[in-house]
Amino acid sequence: MYSGHPYARTVMGAGAGFSGPPFGAPAMPPAPQWDAFHGDPANARRVVDTMLGTSQPLTLEDSFGAVFARLSKDRANVDLIAELQSLKERVEQRLTEQRHARMSALQVEHEGVYEKCRAKLDEKTGLINELGRFESLANAVGEKLSRYRMAAMAAQGRQPPDETFPTRQELEAWRAEVNAARVALGKVEREYSDAVALVGETDQQIRRADKELELLMGEEARLKAQAEGRPWRTPLGLEVPAEAE
Image 1 (cartoon, rainbow, N blue to C red):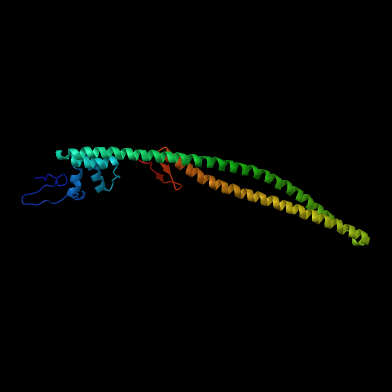
Image 2 (cartoon, helix red, strand yellow; image 1 turned 60 degrees about the vertical axis):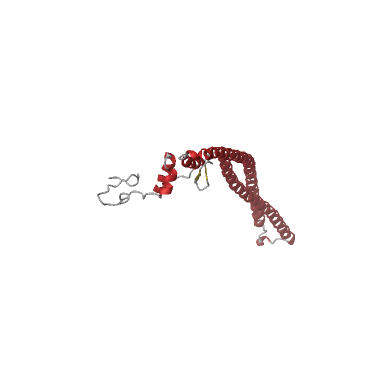
C-alpha cells in the first residue's frame, strides 16, 4: 500500500513500517513547515525550492499569502482576515510612498552628479587644449634653445688662435662674447625647463581629471539606473538587481 503523504509514496509490505523516501529523493520536511504552506501552490513551490537549494526570497505578497492561506482554513478567522487585508494595504501603501521618496531623492542626486560629470568633462577638455598650447610653446622654446646652443658653441670656437699672438683686448673681447652667449643660453635653458615642466604638470592634471571623470560616470550610471528602477553593474562587473516594487 501507499502512505497518504506525498513524500511517503513507498510501497509498504505486510508488517513493514514506513521506509522513508526513495534513495536520492529529498528528505520529508518537518510537518509544521509543510502544513504552513499546504493548500497554496505558490508557497508550496517555495518550500520545495528551499529543500532543493533553489529558493528565492519571499516577496511581501508571498508572506501575506502564506498567512491568508493559514487563516482561511477556519471560518472563525474571518475577522482576522479582514484586519490582515487592511494591514496589507497599509503596508503596501507605506512601502510605495517610501519607494517613491527614495526614487525622487535618487533623481535629485543623479542630477547633481550629472552636472559634476559635465563640469569635469569641460575641465578635462580645457586641460587638453592647454596641453596642446604648452606643447607648442615647449617645441618653440626647444628650437630657440638649439639656436642658442649653436651660438654659444660658435662663440667658443672663435677663440683667437695662439699662433696669431692675440692682444689682451682681443682675448678679453672674445671672453666677453663667450660669457654673453653662455648667459643667454642659460636663460633659454631655464625657459625651456619651465615649458617642459608645465607640459608635465598639465598632463598629470589631465590624468587626474580623467580618473575623477571615470568615477563620476560610474556613479552617474548607477544613480540613473536606480532612479529608473533598472539593474546596474558595479565597477567589478557584478549586476545589482533593481529595487523590488
